[in-house]
Each structure stands twice: as structure tokens, then as C-alpha cells.
Image (cartoon, rainbow, N blue to C red):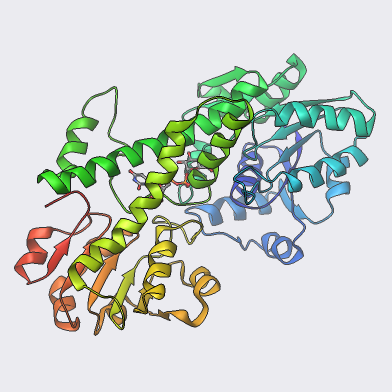
Length: 435
Ligand code: UGA
């Protein structure tokens, strides 16, 4: 039976969940404090760029299964299930900041007008769901609710398709009543035999952190192997390919590059170390991953400096600003560290990105030049550094670029170009982990 759902938060987590649950046939209200965002969403305008989002948004608004509101109290009082999808950004000390979650809990306490299931989708430290349960019980003075932990594994850029085709759904729960309600909400996935992992709160919370930290470790591992490859004359692409042929390893997340970024891996690895500290358990491996990832970003500028020498006054073209392709998100993007280092060394930067220019302006203001096209960025450049793995950069017209550049130097931090082709055209080419 379809359920009445409120999803609080219309960022990557909340918005995709709201649209997805509506598409499964539930009645969903997406809630946010930002009125402009809500007005736009009700008109079918998404605040984020995600493949396929418009079709689903449009379809579910038209069917009236989905609407958006700023009235959190009214929405909650009309719903059987409340999903928490607000941000949990890192605090200065690396711990997750739960203040937005707490604000939602205060509203829940005020609007607990009958049995409700409170589902945490935001990534929260181990122990949070139990704390949420105690918090509501105490403040609302009621037992008429259940808390469920339902971490998400969506990738930015592929979030819509990941929502409808997940590898698994993880549910931390305590009562059969709440389990049946979750099954109802996810019925289309449940019926199509997507695996559901039913577990306790702590297990669900840890699965999320362990998953992200493992992937971050996998990337960091191949980045270190890439660095070693450079020193011994091996080719990391072939190393990764052969490793990936081992079914126990698999080929995904073995692409060497400028270091991982985004709103999740950097934040969640730091939070996992903090959780380890809290319980006095050694998390030195993850700690080392965080450190090594910072080194990897710095290494990209070192590669440039090794070729061009002093960066002062040099014109550098930066292609790609988003933390990965298919998103406009620049949070913790390696491009930020790289550009900041270049600015610090008084280089002149001309940058291009197919989607992230508006976000870049918010970060760098007038410290860099923003270019409409890749060719505008490379014109007159002393070096070109490729940072984001956008497909369109794979087919750059190197002949044209060679004519436009002042010095023919390419740092390809994503191994997207063909080194032989670049060298034929007279470029000094440097990838990551390849000769
Ligand atoms: C990541 C996880 O993949 C999702 O499963 C999870 O739900 C999400 O975090 C989250 O916790 O919300 P996302 O941050 O969107 O998703 O990005 P990824 O596709 O995982 O990439 C993360 C970073 O690793 C990017 O900077 C990417 O360029 C880099 N990367 C990825 C590599 O350098 N090499 C690889 O082989 C793969």
C-alpha cells in the first residue's frame, strides 16, 4: 500500500529520494527551508544537475504524487513516514555536524500526531539513530514512532539511475511494524529481488562509512601504485586492468588520478577516523588514505612545476573544475587545491568546465579567468592541466591546441589523452602512472 511521506532536505540525498519514492507510487512532500528552491521545484526546476532528473520530476509533479513545501510542520503532520535527508557537513575537527538533523528532530517532536516512522537517509555517525530514538522519546514524550536507518549509496551524476537500480538497500531497524512499512515504500525494488540487508542501527550506519572508506582506499591504493609506476617505468593503466581481471578485486574504482574529491569520500573518511577515536579503535589505514589523497593533489602541481619551472607569471589552462564528470559539484574538487596552489605561485589561470563555472565563480571570484570554450582557455597558455574526466576532453583536437598554446605542455591528471599522439605533435606530456 502506498504511503504518505515527507522528505526533509532537497539536496542530492533528499531530492532524489523524494522523486524516487513518488515514482514508486507513494504520496511525497519534499520539504526545504529555502523558499526559492521550493518554488522552483514546484515549477519543475531542479536545483541540481543530474542525468534524467527532469523527466522524473516532471512526471511525478504532473501525477500529483509529488509536491514541495516549506511548511515542515504541516507536511510532517500529514505523513506516515518522515525521511531525514539534510546535510551533515564536517565540522572543523572532522566530526559530522548534526545540527541540521537536530532541527528536523525538533519539528518531528512538535508534530508527532500519530504513529510515524522516522528514517535517516543522511550519512550520520555510528550511534546517531539510537540517539534520535532517545531524543524523540524524551522530547515528544511518546513511544508512538519507530526509527529506521537507511543509508544511501547514490553517486552524483548517476543518482537517478542508482536510485532505481541499486546494488542493495540497507535497512537498520528494530520493529516488524517499521520493516513492513519500509517494504511497502520500496515495493517495486523489493518485488524485483534487489537484495535488502536487514540489520541493526549500528551495522547500517557502519556499512555506509565502511563502503565509502573502502572505495576511497581503493582509489588511493591505485594512486600510490601509479606514483610507483612512474618511478620504475611501469604503466598503471595496464597494472589496474590486470588487477581488475581478478574477480576478487574487480576493475571499478581503479582509475589513477589527481585524488578523490566530492562531498562524500573526504567527509566520510574523516568522520570514520573520528568514530574510531571515539571508541579508541585504530583507524590508521583510513587516516593514511586521507593524508595520501592530499599528497596526490599536491603532486599534480609538482608535475607541472617539474616541467615549467617557476610558475610565477605563467599562463596555465585548467580544463575541468568539477570533482568528477557529469556533475557541476566542486566540493573538495582536486581542481580547488590545484588552482589555489597555482594562484599562490602567481600563475595566471584560464579555466573551463562544461557545468561547474557558476560554482567556480563562487569559489575563486575574479582570481581566475573563466572561458566559454576549452580553446579559449588554452590560447596563449604555457601549460594545460586536465583535471576532470569529462568525455568531451577525451576528444580534444590536439593539433588545434598545439597551434594555440604558447608552450606545448600537458599534464593529464586523468590519463584521458593518448601520450603517443601528444608527443607526435611536439607536446611534453605527463599523465599519472604512465611513462
Ligand atoms: C560516492 C559513492 O560512490 C556513492 O556510492 C555514495 O553514495 C556517495 O559517495 C555518498 O556517500 O553520497 P560520489 O561522491 O558521487 O559517490 O562520487 P564517486 O563517483 O564515488 O567519485 C568520488 C571521487 O573519486 C571523484 O573525485 C572521482 O573522480 C574519484 N575517483 C573515482 C577516482 O579518482 N578514481 C576512480 O577509479 C573512481
